[in-house]
Image (cartoon, rainbow, N blue to C red; front, side):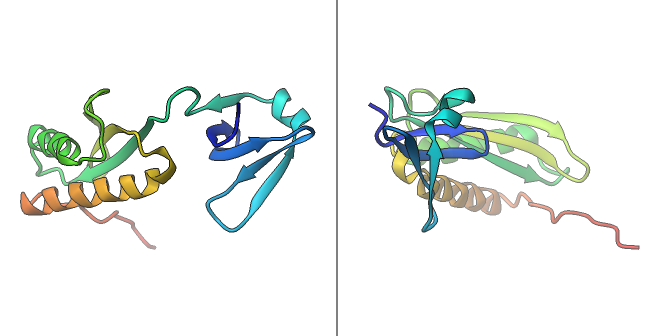
Length: 149
């Protein structure tokens, strides 16, 4: 029942794990696994990201310069998601203007993929597509400003 599902248990975020008799095996994306006693598993909140559905939501944070047109950025983000064959049409991708940052305008692109076991690759491909679209439109991605004394 729990095999190969992606869950979230406090700090062990979004890792596939196998539920055994006395413990659960969390499979990290590094060459290390964690054996977690089931007592700890049942005494803490568990969020199951893929139970009954292999869809996976991706959230891409994007920051652009203040000289950028927010409507143009939203359109570019949506187009990048809609053109990506790994992104689902339903639920539909969603781009939002989040806030005015210290030196950037902050946006978030949310999209869903059915390729939940390789979501990092899909995320990376989407990020590359967004970067390319911003660059082609001459929209700047400013460097963080830091004051050193």
